[in-house]
Length: 92
Image (cartoon, rainbow, N blue to C red; front, top):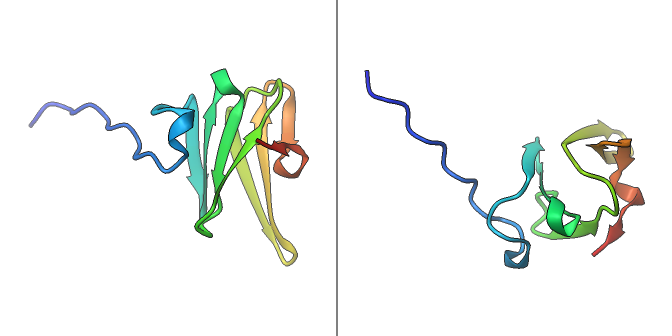
């Protein structure tokens, strides 16, 4: 049996100005996110070729949920203050 190897850092898909390592990152289906706490910036890639960066204000993002319905996709982040709808965050 070979020893475990360290996990590789995720390949950077977000703007270089945000840095190399997000505080949290993940994705579901066609969407992925990365959160940079020091800058209060979540980056979101909805698989349409565009990465959008938002200002999270005083929210510390720790997770994400994606809800699909007949009217589209709703993205909700989890923060220390509860759930935060992506549509309520300002673009950075």
